[in-house]
Each structure stands twice: as structure tokens, then as C-alpha cells.
Length: 399
Image (spheres, rainbow, N blue to C red):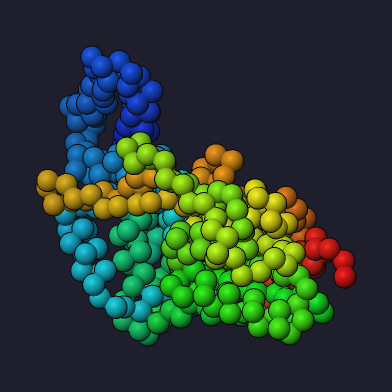
């Protein structure tokens, strides 16, 4: 079967399954036959198998349909075949080098949610929104997210080859990245005038405690107000995001989770965990995800902070692996995190009350100038960073 036909069948079956699933879910109030329309999908596949000019690989078609259905539900969901699931479990136990990419599914392919600051991928110029067409010459079309993450890992010093599609570029760009041990950036703090600036680029265990330490040190140095920089804060746990918000927020709801079967679980602020009452501004960008989004949403809604920057990525859910009878597995979101006003962070991200789209647009224009070297020059990145920081400083009360 030729590749073009495979893509057509997989894409078509993916769309049919997604539409039928949503149709069935939408009519699930009828107890008699909630999945009646799935028979249409079965009939379509039967016609393809019986009547098309070539006999399709039904195993590949089914896997593609399942992955398409999962992506329609959640860009972080995955279906792993039995062999892929074995590799996934084996990879979780091994400590391997990596390139430092945080991935999600977009348009059926892998997309970059973030490149961990300082990682090989960040140094190579990967940016949020890049679409990865292939990894080591293997197409990511309908590739399970968890399996793609495994492909990024390997021996330190070995290379990963990428084909990357970027906005307003007509051709894919070839990129080679050398795997290395990825070190997540430490929390940093500095005093600028009377403002303490704290940068958090990941919420690994212990990072919230480090933030509290930086706050105490900056206040001791004379800080009268604070900026919490959460740009590129895309890794770590949601629980750390809740704890981060609670360093600043005395009362009210920080977030809650809710799923089809899990019910609503609220996470209120606890006044005993607050470490500062100084005026606060928070900076976010489209690479802010997970715990960073949870903290930003709560501090914005409670009016504890001014939030400056771009709408965040939208990735905050409780996920679990479900083993299936044939040895395969599905990774699903069982609950989503919500902002206090009831908006799903996974679906909506967090929109700052002070948007800074003009500077980011100008940098994006610079990035597609073929006369510029690739990746984007550090000077352009720095100018954007400084401008967003300046906006955050202006959002704080005057001395």
C-alpha cells in the first residue's frame, strides 16, 4: 500500500472515529444505544477493505484512528501498542540522556510545547509551536506522544535528527541535536532598584522552597516589590504550582480538579504558608505550562498579582496509564485543573491582564527573515525579555 493512501485512510478513519465518539457522547443520555453510530465507522472500514483498489493495512489504519481520536480529546493522550508499551516501561526505568524538549500533539504531528532552558534543544533553537515532522527519519504523523518522548532519549553524545516545520516557512528545516544530561535551571533572584526579580524555569521538587528562600533574601536586601518570572516554566508537577501560588496568596481558592468520575477536589490557599505580602507582578509566555499556569491563574484571579505576557500553553491535567487486554496501553487525562473562575487551564491556558503581543510579533517577524542566522539571535531574545520585564516593573506600584 503506498504511503499517500495510508495517510488518506488513517486521516479519514481518525476523523470518523472522533466525530462518532463525540456524537455518541453527546447522545449518551439515551440508555438504549449510546454507541449506535459507531456501526457507521465499521461499515466505512468494511467498504474500504472490500472495494478500494488496494487492500489497506488494517492494523496501521486502526492504530491511526485511535491516535486521531485521542488527539481530538487531548493533545497529551497516547495509545501505545504492546511493543511500544514495553519500550515505554523500560525507558521509564532507565536514566538516559535527552535533548530537553517538552512535546504535545498538534495537527497529527509532534509539536514543541517548550525547550528546557539551557538544554541541547534550546541551544539548537527549538521554540514553542515548532512542528516536528520526523524524528530520526521516522514520521511523527499519528505517532504516540509517549513513544516520541522515548525516541528523544539515548546515550549521551548521540545525535537525534529532526525535520521541523515552522510558521511562514515553506520547507522543513533539518536539525541535528546531540543528547546530553538535561539539568533543569535553578531558581534565581536579583535586586533591581527596589524590586526583587525571581526567575523560575521549572517546578521540580524543592523549587518552591528555593523561591521562598530567594524571597527572604531579597526582602533582607531591601526589596519593596517582586516580579515572579515564569517564562519557560513548563516542567514539574501541578502540586508544586499550587504550593508556589500559596507563597503569595493568603486566602481563596487556588485551583480545583474535576473529571468525569473523580468529582471536584478543591485546593484552597492556606494563610500559614504565605511568606510575603509585597506587591507582585508575574510574567508568563506561551511556554508557561502546567504548575506555572496554575500559579499564574490563581494569582491573577485573586488579584494578588498583575500578570504580564502571552497566553500560556494550556497543559494542566491529571494523567494515568491504563493497560489494555492485548498488552497495549492508553495514557489518558482523568481530571483537569481549573482556574478559580471555572475555566479549564488545559483548554484555555491563562490570558494575562497585561498582554504584550506587539514585541513578540516583531521578534517572530525577525525569526523568519532568511538573512538572519538560525537559531534566532540571542540579542533578539534578550530584547524581548527586557521589554516584558519592563512592562512587569511598570505594572507595580511606584516607589
